[in-house]
Image 1 (tube, one colour):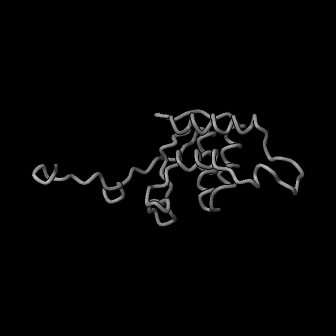
Image 2: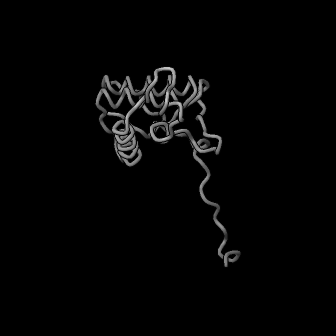
Image 3: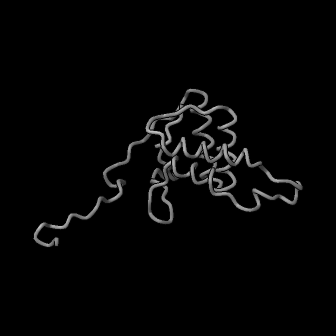
Amino acid sequence: MVDFDYVLRNLDGSVLSFPSGEHMVLRQVVSNALINTSQEDIENPRIGKARYTEEDAIRRVELATRIYGATEPIGLTGDEAVMLKTAVRNAQTVYVTALVAKYIDACQKGEPPALQPLTADEHPPGPEVIPEEQSL
């Protein structure tokens, strides 16, 4: 079972963030990797054919949808785990790819690492509360 609420962390333990400042959570990293594909992934002249078929594309979108909507840990087949790790490898840095692969492999073996909760300083700021006398 894989908990896709896993927050990715730097070597120093700080939370990895997207350029937008949003925390890098496994759910977003893998869903984006599965559905955002470069043209090179579709037409690879080196091997003379597409890296995946339309059926594969449908499977990727279905898996991304299942992962993104998961409210609790979910199981992955061996093929889904390979598809997910390959998509992340094609879309992310070496470091993020390694973090995701190690986490997925550990979960597949039934040995998921303990999730580190966010500290108070790591929580994204909430919406600013405007005092009632200043609101319209």
